[in-house]
Length: 280
Image (cartoon, rainbow, N blue to C red; front, side):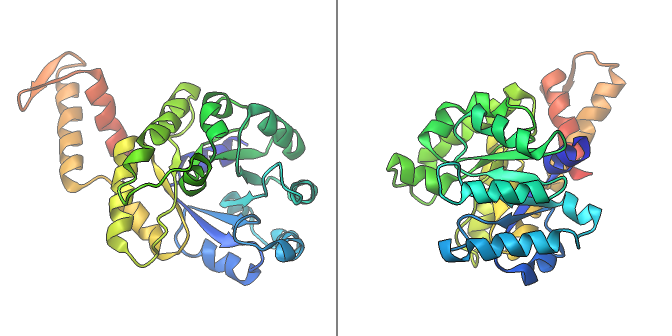
């Protein structure tokens, strides 16, 4: 479980692939995405859900252990008629990591964790008012590696009409970042950029995610994977700054020191160290 948790925690990109398109599973794994989410929910129509479950069950054993470590399964929400059959499928998949949509309580995650067993890893998708209200307890639930934001469904649930900058969603995004920090889990995963042919929008959205304290994006097209990685990578200026801060800190033996007229204290050093770690 710890290896899977660490792998999910370090990922910068999570690429969705429809569960009823098994011929795309291998392509998604070869796309460069850090993690691949096999989607049994929104990407699959109700009539196709049984076939999607069957396709995943048939192909699962053919994945290598490293490949299975990069796969997550987005099941259907707990209040849907397809949830029970998805849970039956999870009994057949060894060491599965699961994305739970419409996550709204720690109790849901306790139940899912019990089904997966101690090696199962969870990534709750927060996309409703109740999920936001209970985000602290969700983040602290056992086996949760990371939170993810489903901002489109959240807008619909709240009756919001966001502009292109999604300023209206800043409080929701901050709540996920804060809850993750309090629970001492990895920084959360931000939602998708709907336009798959707009590299500028994807870049702007990723930089906003980075500024807010997110450290990964959900992706709906392979083209977005590299854009997510580039957006989260430290710039040359950021790396130079971080290297100088760490060097100044080492030279002062951990004491307070000024660099370019700015006092370098422990929070600044920690930020610099995280920047260098992100580059690695």
